[in-house]
Each structure stands twice: as C-alpha cells, then as structure tokens.
Length: 109
Image 1 (cartoon, rainbow, N blue to C red):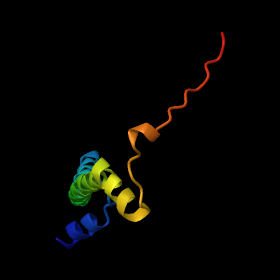
Image 2: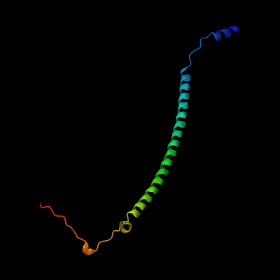
Image 3: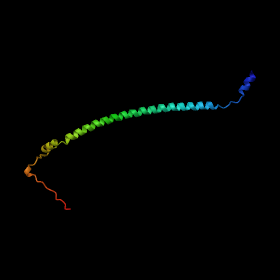
Image 4: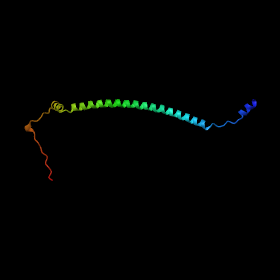
C-alpha cells in the first residue's frame, strides 16, 4: 500500500484539460456580464432621474414663459401706453386740424 501511495504522489501533475479552461473562461464571462448588467442598470436609473429633473425644469420654464407673455401683453397694450403718456408725460392727442401730414418726396426713376 505504501508503494501505491508513493507512486501516486510521485506522479507528475498533468495540466488542466481544455474543458477546465473553458469552464474558467465561461465563469469569467458570466461574471463580467453580471457586472455589466448592474453597471448599466445603475446608469439607466441615473439618466432617468436626470430626465425627470429636466422635464420638471421644462414645465416650470413653460409656465414662466406664459406668465412673461401675459405680462408683456399687459405692459404693451395701447390703452396702458396712452394712459401713461397722459399721466406721466402730460401728452394729449392733437386736434385733427393741428395735424400736418408730411409726404416724403418720391425718387424719379
């Protein structure tokens, strides 16, 4: 028996078979794939959060734009401009008989 044990232990170790290398490579690829899935899922969540933030910002800016358009319409209305001209600048609409229309001379062709 001791001779058998000695002969077994003195046997040279043979290199791993091709099958073992394939299994190791496959395991590494599966692990890499799992890491990639986790990484890209995380990136997807970050981008979705950023998209939601930008959509909220767009909505707020659209509301502000609408308010600014309304304010612009109010500030530039003819009635308001005329009232301010009368009150602050003491301007008045001229009488029709005091209005002089000046025509621009036409160029000869």
